[in-house]
Image (tube, helix red, strand yellow):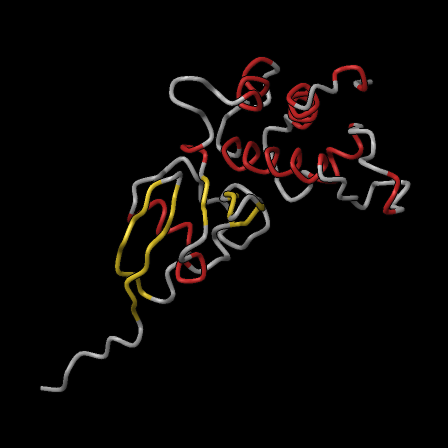
Length: 183
């Protein structure tokens, strides 16, 4: 009998929500499947499984990533934050509170991905990163106003089949402390 071919699997260490997890994975395992099926972190949702809906969005080293398109082996050693890691202890993150207060969650299926994206949007905006909707992209222009257009453009990778977009935009604005810019 020939020895088993182990070249299709590896043992990796994932840093998820501040905890280390070492697990063997097939090289074809997506980060989404590793999170949901191996680590029981089912808050991250599987939507289209093609990277088009954003339901599986998590943060990898603070940046958005559609986890259905990223291989788990490529995430080894990186800091991964899922929706389970957003709140601190028993206190919701301000983005989560705003989604609840302004009814930005509707059926809730896309909400974990929306919230992870919103967290990254707020960080990107605060760092002065322009979006396709930014009118003045000069390096010294500073962060653009966080208008509904800016938020819609920055959140455009996340689909909501319930159509809660208006509430989501208001929730992101509220979380950013930008109520005065609401239309």
